[in-house]
Image 1 (tube, rainbow, N blue to C red):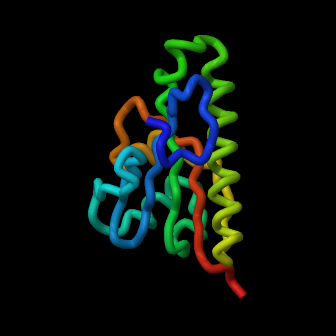
Image 2: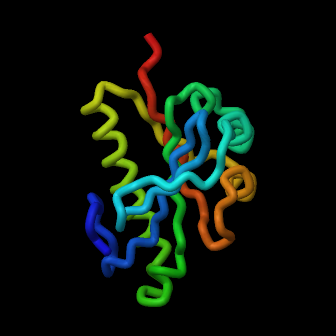
Length: 142
């Protein structure tokens, strides 16, 4: 299960799910196959932007990477410390995204200000997946 993972995970439980939002649709990253599976067709970036307090960068970015958590994957083992471990892991993942963006000459920044329920609805996320970050990635404005 740990193949294609570039960030540590407490107990190798991997509570995070990664989604990509482009003008073509929403894609769910499947690490076991190292591929992205389209879950929605069409441009949901305007709705995602509204859910994130009208953050314009979301509509302008070539891709938005959404990191969501399934806390239950970590809670069964770590109980009260699970939230801490999940949040540490999302920090590692976000850092890797930012470092890769820089290496590719792209810009990125983390957005944590959004309405969770609206993001879940826009992306049609399962109820047990809580969005933690939206990271727009694209060419920096000159």
